[in-house]
Image (cartoon, rainbow, N blue to C red; front, side, top):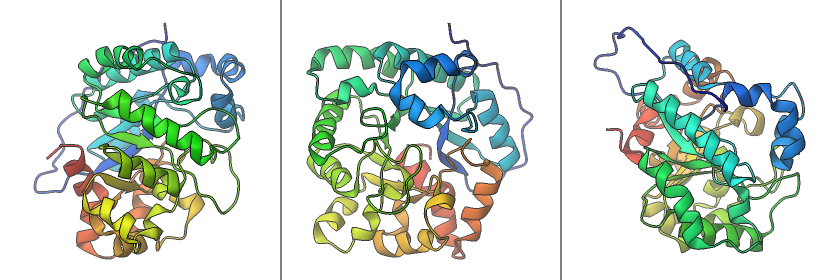
Length: 311
């Protein structure tokens, strides 16, 4: 119903002897979802919190590819929206999987997890896994962007712990990384800030479960706790990346080098959060924030390629 993406045919570009550029955080919606935006705002509180304002940008998979072409990006994680409804998440996932198949490997589909799976209502573990199994079999590269509940309220640590347990149950045996929305506990308010894992909740997720996580928006500030032995221990396991999505709106440019210094450059990954930000501008800003060639190469694609098995 929501439509498929067109096929992508591109002439080869002269990219020999160049490191792969990977954007680990973009979003795409089916064209029919864009057309039904007003109805979806009324049907899903979480969607309304981000997209009720007509100025909030939405994009199709075609537009993600076009942005990649313009920015010189080789591969990109394309994530869905965390609808409350499992059926709507499955439809969104189907669109992303179709788009990925047509992109000849350029798009890495991260399928959305229903917020209904992660909340207080009991959900049968077998039913959750039965929902995921056909989507994983079709080639899902991961799950995300994962949010906890809808609406503007921040999740409590108890709600985050429950969500972490449910996520671990859902992905057990599938070896799919998680792109997790992370929320700062300080700073200004903005649409979409709520509904994520806070630094403490994110630490508990990775410390308590054998999951691999891309922590969006610099993990809500978790890397600034990297001098704590308990945080350093999970970093040393290599199961956690911090993406830079929305950095322009959250931190000063030295955040790239500061996180690399505290947590290690191997934990830094560039994410544009397209279409929230233009991919070309965000890539340029990120590269300019890192004067060290090794850090820039790692953050702009090397770490993501390793973490996602693209090498």
